[in-house]
Length: 300
Length: 267
Image: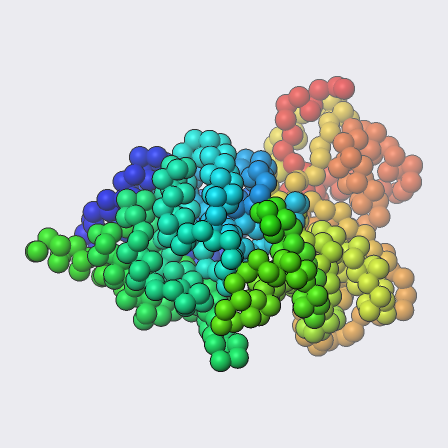
């Protein structure tokens, strides 16, 4: 069993959304159906699991396993469908179904993205990009307020991977994220792989991005893999969540952890699923970085 | 350009064929930085994500349709479906209800008249798999209902139950496809009456072939007809219908939903 590690920023999440489980281990993995039974059978060394609530607005197999696994591990609900950046209100039916899961599973974190996916009645099933300007900020604040009001608790918002940038941007994404958290009272889910992808795709400096994030807002970190696609003489990185975390992203993570001390960290993998052990190994690598950082801090 | 308009135009660019992306509104494309990678190439990444992920979701819900038409045809057909029928909510398992009707009018699939029935069959399986949890009516519960009230009970089917009919040998087609074409190929020349109960007693979906009289009664019960009236109507149409055997079979199969106390009362 891992020694309890202090997770300063998660304590805020716990106070805003109590879980039945205290979080002793800061590193979790995304829970996906090919691993359900093995997780129940082997109780792997992970601190918590995260699911997309949209996959559980139903009965049957998936809910059965989530019921079982939530008895052993704290749960985080990471939405992909609130469409917080859409220029329309958040879908009330989506909020209602999400809230039902919150009431049942008592997640220690709930989150979604700084992106949009719905326009009118069409849901495009992707995290689509936003211009970072005043109009977008006001719309996000309104939708975050609607969600937080409905849930009666704080949500976290995640920085996206984008493949296109708007001319209308009036500030860097990190300033936009900080401002959104400051003005709407939401927390931040910092996706290190997204920062890496984002900075590659738009010729930005990933370390500068992390250095400009307000540490006090960050309550969760995501780590995932991506692929590279060649376009002419250039390449574009695509956030596919179907690979190991690359070395550059691990280096960025170490840099982020030094700034943050620690944060609940998730290993995400959403397609072409590997054996469960691969995710457990990735989680162990993140845990080691957190623990070594804590040791360095305490001996300094 | 205002946010609403940008998003509307972005949506339209996603819901059009890949080959027509270069016909996107120039004013819309002007909204983006055109640096080391051209804007259109960047839009194509999103187009691949949106259309690719939705097509993949449909292929996962309709594997027999895919087996029948092949990978390339399925990718083309699902993409065209996506353009006119994007999901109405963010839960992908609820996506594809209109696929059956789309196939009916999809000209390239005209030579496979049974294809839309296969889509309807696979959608019914999908609905059963994801239906809300509920409890079955047990023999004990049934025995506690006063005999004089039996004819008044309204005992709908489980939430996962779907009654399915087709003129084609759907189960033979399914077995043939899922065995990768090994075994006897289904005889498509003669009309056949397929009637199925598709439901989820526990966690897995069961598919039970049923007779015409059973189908009629289950349908009436599902429409909330009182038991007595439903049996009477079934017997009018099928005088040899064996109700006691029917009841025993479907209690054992756990077809009926748990009834609330007030359902036993006369209405």
